[in-house]
Structures are given as C-alpha cells and as structure tokens.
Image 1 (cartoon, helix red, strand yellow):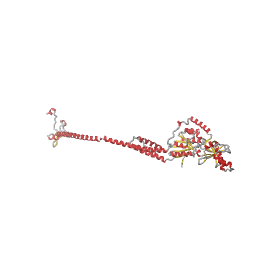
Image 2 (tube, chains in turn yellow, red):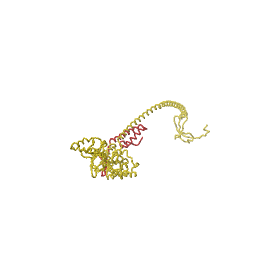
Image 3 (cartoon, chains in turn brown, red):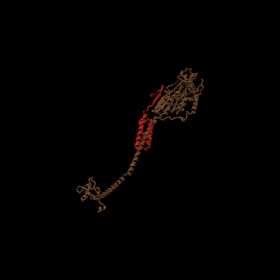
Image 4 (cartoon, one colour):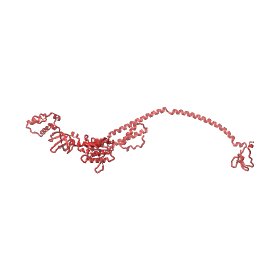
Length: 443
Length: 78
C-alpha cells in the first residue's frame, strides 16, 4: 500500500499509465530518475514501480473474483493465506485477521468461493496478490433456493409451529450433547457449562457434523439420548463452517427426528448469521454453540445472589417478627396490669373471709342447738335406761334362748326362764299360766 | 405449620433446597407464625441457604461420552 489513503487515490488519480507525463506527485521523482538518467533499476525500484502500477489501477482496487481455494493456511496471527484457482490460472490471496474473523464460515481447500478485495504487489515476496476483504461460498444461490424450498415444505407440515416447542428446563441435571467429539465447539460448550452451572452433568453422543454421513449419525446419537430417562435437555451443535459444511443440519430426516424427540432440544449451529432447518425445528435456537450452552443452564452467580438475598430477607423477617412479638408482649403486659385479677382477688378474699366467719357462726349456733337437744335427749334416754327401771324393782324375763318374754303366749307351763334384777339373775319355771282379756288388762 | 417430616437438609438436591428456601422466606415474610415456628423456619432456612451455597462452591462439571463400542466413559477435563 502507498502512504496515502486508497480512497483519495481512487477519486483523484487519472488511471491511465503513459510513458511520459505521469502527474503523480509521489512518482515524479522516480520518473525523473528513470527518464533522464541511464539508470540500472534495483530490484526494489522495479518492484516498487510495478506495485505503483497496480495501485493506480482503480479497477484492481475493488475486484470480485470467483475460484476454488487451495493451499489454505491459517497463520497463528489469524491471517489467511491461500490460492484461488480455476482450470487455467492461479491467484495468490491473503486475508488479514481483521477481515478473517468476520467470516461466516470456515474456508478450506476445495471450497468454491467468491472473494472481494484489491490486488497489489507484495514487494518482499515479488508477487502480486489479492488482498481479500470478504469471502463467501460460491453457489450460495443454488443452495439457498433448495433451502428455502425445504423450509417451506417443512413449515407447511407444521414442524416449526410454536405450539410444538417444548420448554427448556431452568435447571437441568443432565444435558445430552450431540456434536463432533474433537471439535473446538465442544470445548467452548464445556467451558461455558462449567463456568455457568457446574452442577450439571453432560453426556456426549458423538457424531460427524459434516458430510454425507453426518445426518444419519446425528439422528442416531439424538435418538439414543432421547431414549434415555436421565436426560433433561439435548443440545445439537456444530461450530462455524461454509454453507456446505452446515448442510447436514438442513437434512429433512434430521428435522423430523428433532421434531419427534421427547426431550427439549437446543440447536446451535455455526455463527449468528447461519440459519439451518434444524434451527427452525428446534425447541430453542441458539446462534452459536457456546450460546446454546448459555441457554441450557442458569448462571450460578444469579443463584448465589438470590441465596444471599434470601438470607438477608430471612434475617430481616426474623428481626421484624421478634420485634413485633416483643411489642405485642409489652402491650399485653400493660393490659394485663390494668385488667389484673389481683384487685378482684383481694375483693373475693374478703368476701371469703366474711363467708367463713358467717359459716363459723352458723355452725356454732347449729352445734349449740344440737348440744342442748342432746342434753334433753340424754335425760330422756336416762329415764329409758332399763338399768334405772330395774332399780325401781322391775325385772327382765328371758327365755333360755335369750329372747325377752313379752307375752303370756311366749311361754307354756313348765318352761324354764331367767330373771334379771338390778344386781343379778336367777332361774325360774312357769308353774301356771293365765291369759288376760283386754278388760282385765285395763284394770 | 407444616407438620410433615422435613427431610435432612444435607440430603436435598440443589433444586429442592433452593425451592424450599424460597418457600421458607415467603412464609417467614408472611409472619402469622408462633415464635417456635418462626425460629424453626429461620434455622432451617439458614441451613438450606448454606447447603445451596456449599453445593455451588464444590460443584464440578461431570462429563461422560458414549464410545463407538456403546460404552459410557467419563471424560477427564483438564
């Protein structure tokens, strides 16, 4: 590149190289040397001259060229070096890292591509080359048409309907992963999962992800995972690549297998700008493999923050709760004092005392009454004491069996009986009996 | 109060512990508890939070892979 900007050069320079009369200020010195000194060119001078010739040709400043990639090299710096060729010619190409990183696919040998850029000379290598700024797979038109056609067919069958989309679990315990076992995409995914949600476990069912064998392998791995009952979410993924590379994910059988699966499926294929049929039929489409991983699991930092917030909420709830109970308790204590039964109790106690004294009095008077009654009764009893009667000269007659003789009918002539007097007893015998009439009794 | 026998906190999965923690906070915030009930909830809530944090702290991604022989082998992540 020359020291001035490409745009100003294109706009301001007359791109007609003539032997005499170059008006380019930057070249005037050179021309003077060439024209007027019989100068032997150094390699640098000649090469520089040739580069200037390329650089003033505005048609070479922006070209679009189609060809097939060969000798593709990705330098450690990120720059791409390759050759574009067709049946009769070759064109050396370079693509700087700044442009290469924006590519929507991974170019490789044999890819038919369309490149856009400018042509100039690399003086140190003595070569002219295309400085490619963008690159895209050739034949995109044909594939794109086939893609649209298939997409329409499957859409009309309802494979993309939102109503069929399954929810992706918030916290999966096990994720099934269908991808190429050694791809960088796999490492990206595992890194993301490990960083975001290391609680999850991953079961990888490897599959080829490009080429003719890819669709049946992806389907087989998908169905194997889908048949397990320890899987929560399935991710089908592949890193970036050309439209042809990603074509496996446009396979109609794969689309139907994804549609038929029991488990929720996330598809993350290629780059953000790549859309495949698998993306449309997936329960969730992720723009890239690593974002598929991001969509599959929660972020542990969010949960850590939630746990901290829960702890704070519990603490403040508890403090509030205890404060409330305490003030409730204080209020109750105050009310309790106001409504204290002690006063009533004191009242009652007095009443009880009064009642007790009344009861004492009543009891005493009752007892006193009973006492005097008792004296009368005992006096009466005294008069009825048979001992006193005996003292007055009466006797008690008992039959031998101890029964007291009340009536003439109690005895017959000849019966033995006992006679008790005041100070002793003696035996006797009935020698005669006479029953008295009532008249005689009165007398 | 929930009178069902609550499982040991240490035996709970992260999801279950987190869910119960969420519910515990809600119940504590709602109040309407006896002091014993609130203290028991608070204590269990703290255990749940510690359990959840410990699970997150100690977790490591477990990766297995299906081999071409149809076996499942653990993949060592370096």
